Length: 132
Image (cartoon, rainbow, N blue to C red; front, side, top):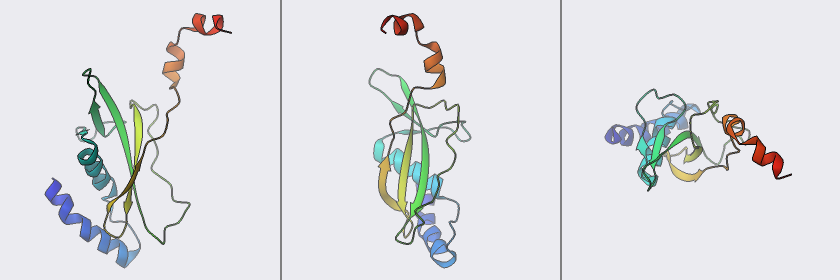
């Protein structure tokens, strides 16, 4: 698989240079780069709500939703990411920014995630109200 993505990256970059439109492989390239750089495990194809898994020292799984975006010097500052799947069965979201000239890694970001609705619903409300 990595050989295919290595071969497609220059073609996708050239397509973007010629047309100004992405070829449609940015997500796959971003996922593969994130998995390689961070030592993650790629989720099975068509897995809902997450793209990769990070195994912790205690053996638990942290599910990660990966969003990829390619941009360059001529990028529109108003570019949007794909929708974050909600309710997300993931631990966090990872933004992978690629250079659109070669689809090489520029940066990776992960936000602090607020507690999910189910986390808040499952919280012990007695201890919360007693703390007030």
